[in-house]
Length: 221
Image 1 (cartoon, rainbow, N blue to C red):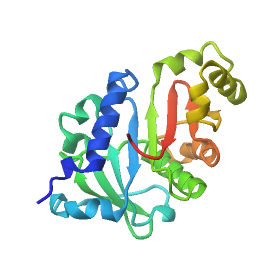
Image 2 (cartoon, helix red, strand yellow):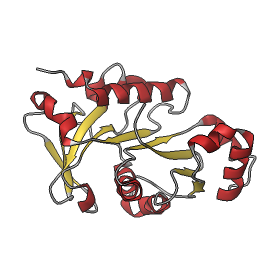
Image 3 (tube, rainbow, N blue to C red):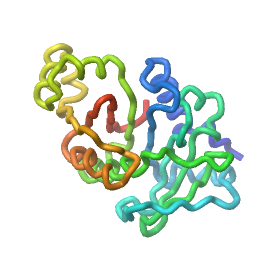
Image 4 (tube, one colour):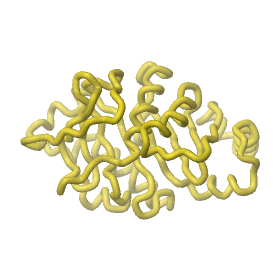
């Protein structure tokens, strides 16, 4: 039997969460991470799945994500602890056939649940699927300390902030040619509020709100 903790996606989540923790971007249980998978990714590890997967309904149906698996961080979990106990801090979930809810296939032991910001993640995944034809697979929320500091000295305006970053570090432009966007006063744990930043994800890969940072990526490396 293959061990799912050795899979590329669990190892990728371990590396990404550990890197973010070491950078000081995800204090305590701050931040969350989701990676969209394919059925082929999880098929070799079915023997690792829970015998009776728990089902959790979504507050808003998302038919675009029907039958799609994800690996997600857990609610109230510390990025620091993912490397120590992946099964307790991560979970593989799969959206049902009509997008109305999802089953927890693996992980999230002891009745843990996915991040409370899953509505914002799922809505953003929907937009990036449409915008990139499925190329972008990662939504990451973190508190990048150096960029948070800039929000207190620069005008919190999309154009001003983006141009200043591009001017200060040419590599920022190379790796993120799309603009940064500011979304103020939103609560990503609520589906209604999560619609605000996800709308910006249609044409912008970075979404900001003091002191949060939401980023979309192709992978978790």
